Structures are given as structure tokens and as C-alpha cells.
Amino acid sequence: HAISSKATYQVLLMTEELLVNLMLPQMAESGLAITLQVRYSENKETLEMRLNWPGAAWNPLEGDYTLDDPYFLPLQMIRSVAQNLDYQYKAEGVNLLSFFLS
Image (tube, rainbow, N blue to C red):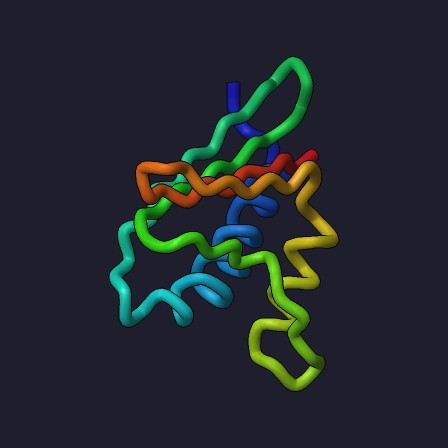
């Protein structure tokens, strides 16, 4: 069984917008230790993406960026595609971000 082309495209899009365009530029000085997990349910036809990284509490999806900010467009694209966005900060110093794509 294979993942659909739509699901593959969504994972690539979210990886580019979230990691490459939003998170990595803002984390360049602190290091780039991000773990990405992708879970696909063929029965439900849903994808779940989970990211975790060490460091101070930081939700990359929060912020009121203006139109001329380089993070505005990636953030809007993520918010329009991702569902059930959930950010948590664990006491062990780990940031967790998860969401679903369908």
C-alpha cells in the first residue's frame, strides 16, 4: 500500500513551510535538533505530523506577523492546511507540535 500523491504533497508542503521557511531561520543560532514523525492511517485517510525539539518554550505558530514579514505567508499556509494544531511544552525542556492533514 502506498501513500496517495495528495498526502505526499501535503507532507512535502508542510515540511517546507513549517521547517524550512518558518522554524529553521528562527532556530539557526540555537541549533537544529528537530525530530519529525509522520503517521498515516490508510483506513481514516489522515496524516499526522509531530515535531519535537529541545530548548526554551517556543510555539512557532504563534505570533502576529504582518504582510511584509517573511514568516507571514508560511504561517498562513500552515494554518489553512493543518487541522487540530496542538503545541505543548514539557517540563523536560521539550517542545511538541502536532497536527493532522486530510
